[in-house]
Image (cartoon, one colour):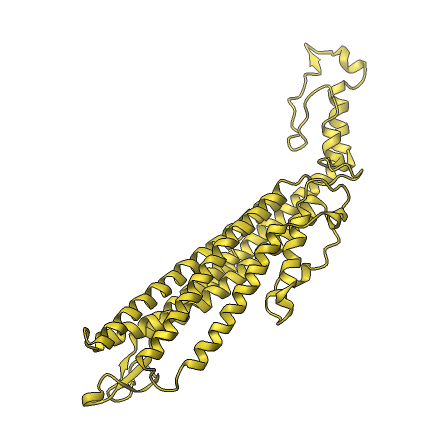
Length: 387
């Protein structure tokens, strides 16, 4: 059960990473296209037109989707980390984790996010060590030098992206930027995109290694020998008996007790070994307790599945309602007259059937908003999917 949840969380995290890589790659390619177009305009080989301006505006708006994909990756990462801790405690039997409550806040709180996420990853790595025998002996295991190197690179690259973002904001003019200013901003954007893709690819290796390390670890036993632990019900059913008994199927073909009106001699000698074994199985408290627990778990799982399905339907209805609301109340733009016809003199939002005079629907912004809502809705749908 827990191994399925762990694998499911890992797959969801990988899906979020792939979406983020795809969107970031598209943003980087659009920046390359914008640099080429601006250089052509600067050299006089290309003339600015309304269609070119709309295209550049569309890709500029599309770049904002990276914020949404980053949020999706963060949510999937937290879900995977929680699944790792749950598997380490309930399937391996380890305990004594100090950073389990930081799986979400460790990435958000300033200064804390420089070291706390590594402590979380390091705990999960040690919990998957194959040699410790007691529940808290994982603390004595050695960490990974490769993981530490990866984390140093992670911190340095994010510091670079923060500095690059501040430079982009400081160089962004209040009005429309000049071509040289736009080229500087686009080159910084490409650098940030490439670095983001490298970081995402490295997450594949880290998550896959830690997940496999946990799944390959045997469960701790009560005697501390590191062997697979067997429950009392399992040990009772493994004892040699006169026959093979399955506690889930207690129906046995009745033996005839009277043949030709004569009482069987077996009956006169008392209960047979089969009858004794069946009575023992039916009255065994550990077996009954295990069966009652299995029945309760089945009912809880069924109830949870119905609840999750209802939540997913609500998510789909909510996404559809938001998309429809965006269409009814879309963004608009008003362009100037004559030589300034390419300049946007006013923009905003209004009802579709009550747009201001000379206003047109800003289709590029509307499409980007729709895509963002669909991505967030899809991530919420799969995050709540009970596999």
